[in-house]
Length: 120
Image (cartoon, one colour):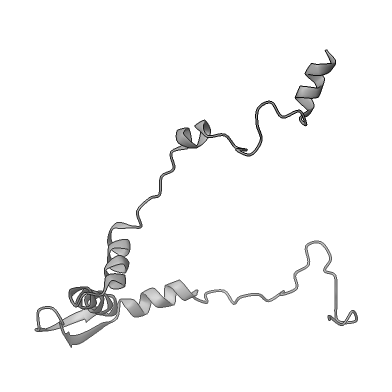
């Protein structure tokens, strides 16, 4: 349980982290992109030739090599990154035609509309 003496309510406009993140600091995605674009001389696992490739190229070629060896999950990952995930569609017309409550009959006497009709 929290110690009530350590709890402090901040005034409007006051921050709990006044210095915050230093200006000019890079976020994780910027750092990842920087390292993915660095190059190395490696042997291409598909062509077998030595090439200068980015880390992103190396990772993609490794994924393609897994696909060629029959890895279905690698194939799905490769297709999703290449073409995007398939969009899921829902036919709303088919859903609208089905009754929402299948266990309640239309002549159920427990509904308020039915009781109102009986009074008239």
